[in-house]
Each structure stands twice: as structure tokens, then as C-alpha cells.
Length: 493
Image 1 (cartoon, rainbow, N blue to C red):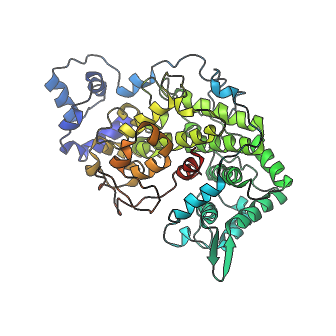
Image 2: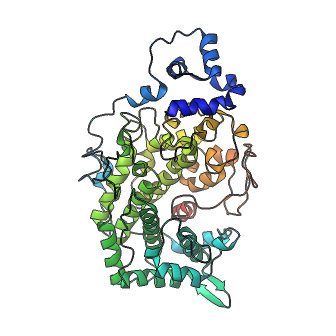
Image 3: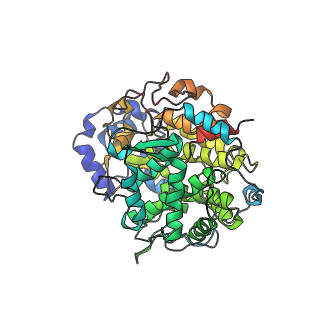
């Protein structure tokens, strides 16, 4: 059915475009894979004939991809999304030997951190969702169980808007709300202690997980991030710490509310089984891992931290022998999701630097090191030629049956200008992954653009004019909670 729909899309006009140049780097096997389609695209047939290939009886590209075998003992337990295995991984690595040190700190020199962030532009956008009144967000936070991921208040605000406002107020120190000044630390203390006092933020456990659990996971990512960042500056109560510990120890990273089988990501690039539970290896997995790592460290709870380590090892086990992660299977959204690799891996590295572990040099089960996985992302996701990802893009997972992924066969300037066709702006990712960039690829600062002090506008030598709405404008934060750049700079010796 997917092949037929793809053909229909192509027949409605895409085949009128010359794709000859795009196929120059395609292997013979990739081209032959398409010949099993009921009616393969004309431009591919022409390319096969031009090369004089005799493809014979071959499987399609997707079938070739998913019949590979994954290495033994990389993952534990069931592949069913509704079940949580006793461990995510069944292999040992030096990550498992890390113990939480006494008096752990995320930021070595907090005064230096404050001096660094004071020079940056305030990371707010324009419009009301980026500049809500405190009273509006307090009302949301006091009734947070009523809000799922896309639920809007009467003021047009979503949970992400108020969470970001809370994070930004810590940047601003004090912010004028009408005629009152709000202190960011006092605000965070007020909200967190309220949640603890009423035993709020119980995991919704809604279907899939649905928008309720998605909002919960991001909220817990913010709670653990703010606590880890500010615990030495805000006198949080024992009640709050006990509440947060309970929430993290009882978190369940699985799907809920369905009776059919859904499969986790551990075989997406090997022995693919549908229907898949793509949350297992997407944004929710990375946010969950970050929250467990810093939550365990900040609370001095080895069990929570070890869960974060096990989840991190699971992420590393999902890279295949080409060093490609399952986010490449996200169809038209693949490149926008793939920025999670440099962004979150750099965040994990900054976190693990605080326990004297060099995550960038960590060797993953596929034999590659973490910094090589980040380099692979930087080398490819902003390129015109995405053929290295193409076999996986076609799996088209978690896109709501959006078959526009054929746009990714085109050069960037010719793709429809829908944000999902592109990765995040490269200057934002360079900033978010600055610890990687400075040590391994400093040339990316000139190529994509970089500024020591964040001003919201920067561009490099690479032409990124294909981004609409002012290509030089970029947002400070990506999917990680942290301002990795400022923490990294503050922790430099």
C-alpha cells in the first residue's frame, strides 16, 4: 500500500522533475531495490537502463534494510512497548561503573555561569506565548493535570510556553509583570513546592503515551533540570526532594491503553515489525534519559541515576553498523528529529563530565564512538544529498501517514518550505553542541555560524537561505532543557 501511494504521489507531478543528478551517488543495489515496486518511477527505470543493470529478482530497499541481523545481547527482555524490561540493555560498559560523588554539582563556578548568561540576549521570542504573565502560568501550573501537550488555556498558552517562561525567568533574574517584579528563583521555588505539597504531577499513563504523558515527560525534564541547576541556590524542602524522588522512581517509560501489540525501536533498522512505538527512541526517550541522569545526580539517588545510564546505553545500542540511528526512519521529519543526536549527546556529555566520564570518547556497541555519531549527523543532515538516509526515511514512521518524504530527494532549495523538511538551523545546533564542536570540529563555527555571546542573529559561510523567515535568526535552546553552551563555558578549567 505504501509503495502504491508513493507511486501515486510521484505520478501526480514529481516524475516530471529531473532526478538524474540526485541518483549519481546511489548504489546499484539501491536502484535495483526500487525495481520490485509495481510501477517504479520512470527516472529510476531510466537510470537502471543507463547503467545497464540486470537487477533480477530483488527485494525492495526497505526489505533489504529490515532483514539485517542485530548483534546479540544488545538489548534485554521484551520488544513489546507495553512492557518494561528489568533492564534496557544486556551488556556492560564503563558507564555502569559511575558512582555519584559527594556534593555533586552541575556547574562548578555558578558565579561565572551567571556572568556568562548575563551577557546573552534573553532567550524569548515575540508574541504572547513567549511572554506570558506569571499569573497566567501560575493558574496553569496549579491545575497542571488538566493540561495535555496541545491543550491551550483561555490565554492561548500551552504547557511548553509556561515551562519555557519559567526557564527564561531564571535567566532574567527579575522580570516585570505589569507593575510587579518576579524573581526567577522565587518563582521556581513557589511552583515546585506547591506541586510537592499537593502531590501533583502523577504520571497520566494515557494511550501511546498520548499528549498527557508527553507533557508529563517534558515537565519532569524541566523540573529535574531546574533542580539540578539551582539546588545550591534555592533552599528546596525535604518534602520537595522526597516528592521528586518518588515521581522519578515510579516513572514508567512504556505505552498505555491499547490491547494490540506495539514494538519498541530496538529492531527498526534490522528486523522491523509493525506497528512500532516510535516514542521508544524519539524525543520522549531522550527527555526521559536526561531527566533520570540529572535527577539521580542532583538527588544523590544511585537507583535513579542508574536508570538514566541504562536508558542511555539503550540509545547507543540502537545505532546500526552504518552509525545511523532510528530517527532516520521518521519520513519527512527525519532530519528535523535527527538533530537530537548532536544536541542531546552533547548535553549528556556535559552532564557526565561532572562525574569525570568522557562520554564523547565512549565506544558504542556498533564500534563507533559517540563523537563519531555526532560528526555523522553534522556531516549529513544539512546536505542536499540524503541518499545515505533514504532507505530508512522510506519506513515513514510516526508521521501520520505523511507521504511527502519524496521531497527529501530534492536539493534543499527545491524542497517545499515546510519546516519538517529541514533540520534545526545549524547555528543553533552548533551552539547547543559547543563542547563537541570545539574539541572535534571547530571549523563548524565558521561554516554554520557561531557567536560567543548569544545575540539571536548569526550566520556562517554556508548558504542557508533556504530557511524562510530570516535565516540568520536562531533560538538558543533546542530539545535539551539545558543551556549546554553556558554550562560548558562555566565549567572550563
